[in-house]
Length: 295
Ligand SMILES: [Zn+2]
Image (tube, rainbow, N blue to C red; front, side, top):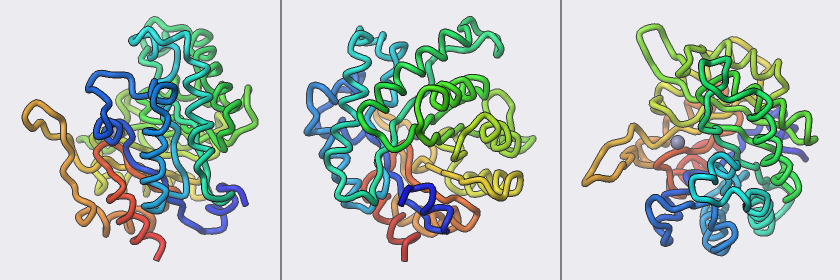
């Protein structure tokens, strides 16, 4: 059964947790291009995927969050864009235990701001960048495209259209929100209710939220707002392990799996159909999540 049918039947599916920090434990240098490991050290990427599958993930995300030509350009790897994405999909696909586990092709922000938001990137240019990455992920065999950690709605809609118009895949669209005086807002001032209506109208099959400075407690409320605005929407949440703290020059996240466990259940109750972890989360967090939500 497809993952969408399973969640529509009432099942909660478990995503994975952070990739970059896990790759650092396996030897990725700070400031290095983790996505390049898809070509240079695929067994290490698979080791992280396996740890999440063993912890209870139903869905793993490809190691391609920063694999658009625009992001790879920072490492002079833009010419390897297609190979990095296709390999990322294939190496994840290769270790799935059965057809009830899935690979989502991970797409992050372009790093540019569209003209419509006051930047200097054209819609057509970003559309082509997203399209190229998504087609490579599709060619590698992903089950869906997940566009995450987005800050701007116009860029997210551009990415959703690029996925929908150039692949046949389901699309998960996820944005970061911040708590504030006027409620939860994206960086560009969009609230969760308007977000869910706009991204589903643009063609997203799943709407969600990840990362940012919403802790899991806030994310429960963000998901509840989305649910209230569109009760039939399929929703996803990937909270960070708390807020980032600077310790000896390194960013760390301190919410333990034990601390987050009860709140994962609340997140599901609020309406999240697909739940995972973002920055600072580990296989131990995913195990706590899976134990809490699946029992
Ligand atoms: Zn994050």
